[in-house]
Length: 189
Image (cartoon, rainbow, N blue to C red):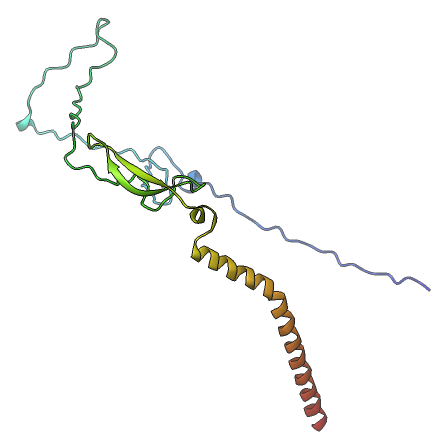
């Protein structure tokens, strides 16, 4: 028995031309043409020149600045900046403020202490939290919504294989009935 010759046609893949796009080559720059700003160039800084307004009627002569000498200081003098004075005491201090924990929050993740209120310091400038020891239930038993949500998820996860088997058997029976009806109608034709 001879092995038949299998011809494989030659496969040709055409070259795809992808043009090189360079933002600096889109608009060629020359010495006699100044490009206008384009919104497609986000980093382009175009220098601008505002001509001086010269009016001989309003001309006021100004003495030229003295030339720089070797004795002049290198660092220029800056104007003195005045810092506004700090208020000694605020009339009303917000208590609790943004830095304080809210009432009902715990001091840390271990839930050892719970915030039950806030108190101003003796001088009235700082707001402190008042803590109380949390109960055993608050430390170790989760809140009711968290407990309900976890229980629902666990029940759904445990019962899903049982529900899947019941649905699988139901679908199988429906498919068998549909096939039997289909074969009966095709025999009658």
